[in-house]
Length: 238
Image (cartoon, rainbow, N blue to C red):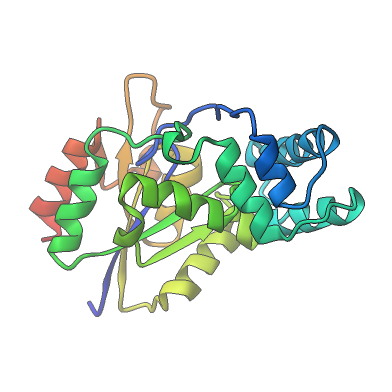
């Protein structure tokens, strides 16, 4: 074996799926970004709604998040750059008070221990969040620096369980047939099954409501939480 790659799903695995709380914007901030009040406040919330439609799609194809943002800026004739719009999104999420997709118990301890042991950590997630916004959230939680690569469906245009998003992952980490990938996720159908089909080893985080596992596509390990995931990783891959 040449290289060992750990790949985490994000939402539901390391981060808690949560509804965003949108804070009332400071009028001065809108003016600083060259926007009008109240018209542009409604425009910005419309863009957020469009992103969330993509976020919860069931299809394997996804509109790229930056395209949604750029098209909306053009259509609404907004006097703002994409980068500044992401900054504004961050303000609407509360910045340091952001409560969107908080960390699940044990996430920091697991990632820190893995990183200290020199393990390569990556992420593959179905999301419409722009990478620039996700970066701000993960930096707030103190875990951004733990990841070598983060591959998002909103950047690639494909959603798990599509084989194309897994191909994007393999290309990004420069995976070869001599390498081994251990995929950790909480969705049997979107994380575990396609990972098994590509020859990865898998750790399935499941609870009492977990779907019935197909015996021909059984995960290598199962865990109830991230504490159990940590035990599995350091017992079998350290």
